[in-house]
Image (cartoon, rainbow, N blue to C red):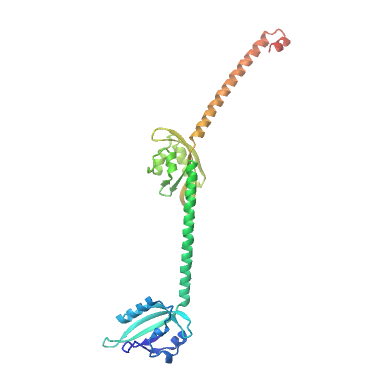
Length: 296
């Protein structure tokens, strides 16, 4: 602790205790009668010094950390808590200041700030890298006709990519709720979609379903939707997210192959029936087995 007398020229120190001597390395004999600025040095922040001067001039208390120097020149962070002392008449008589070495604290704070800056820079780099990966993924998804979607739980708030809207034949920028999107599904397939989605949420099963939708123009399309459940740390459902694709071409090709296979099977059966009838009649008309063999 130190005491200065502002009634004397240059506000000199008039008292220092042993703790001050131990902290700074200066003896009382060396410093009493001097202004405490002798502990300042080239590294001391002059803006902080000015704050001190302004507080003293205004006769106001101040708490501030100053970079001071010990007798041997070693810098240290000095936490000063300065308060004015008035006499019975209200006149300013002294300034009393307690001092605390907070060098380790300040160095720790400086290291934290450096770590924060390093982490901020790393975070910025990763955000840029993530944005680039997301952009590449979006291009790949668009090229493959895949649309992404997410349903946030428990609100059932739906978000989706432009490609997802395009797969459903909806105009760009249209706002759809989860129920609104379900309304696009063919009436005969809605329960399948709803039950599959509920099962994924309730049991954590993989959501993978193919269903028909109707566009605003009445066109029927086949959609394949796949997704999975994400949970919060406590295990409660957080969201279901996945992708959708327009698989109409594949489904129509499968239907066409099925029709062709059915027709081919029908024709083969008819041909076999005709051959069987011819063989049977030939056997009946032949006079002997040898004649029947030659006729066939």
